[in-house]
Length: 121
Image (cartoon, rainbow, N blue to C red; front, side, top):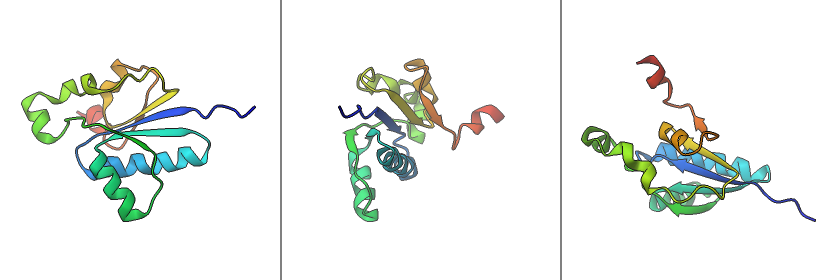
């Protein structure tokens, strides 16, 4: 019997392509390690980066986190979790700089690229 590949949700902040790029790199590594990564990110940005870099293409769910600067300034950014699909079918969840994921999944992993900004405030 072939062991089940762990299903991992990778949530990329839609504020810039760097967030998507990091999650695509993680998706490739997880796939190589035997996981089944699913990227939740703006589909157009994701597919553009994949094509430009001829990189691994995970399953992609078109997801806009609405966490751009204008969203934070207007107060709409805190609601991004309401737009998420059900995450209960995932063995693990990784979020790129979106701390609010911990309100939904206490076991979520966080990338730490910008989290130090919260700690230093």
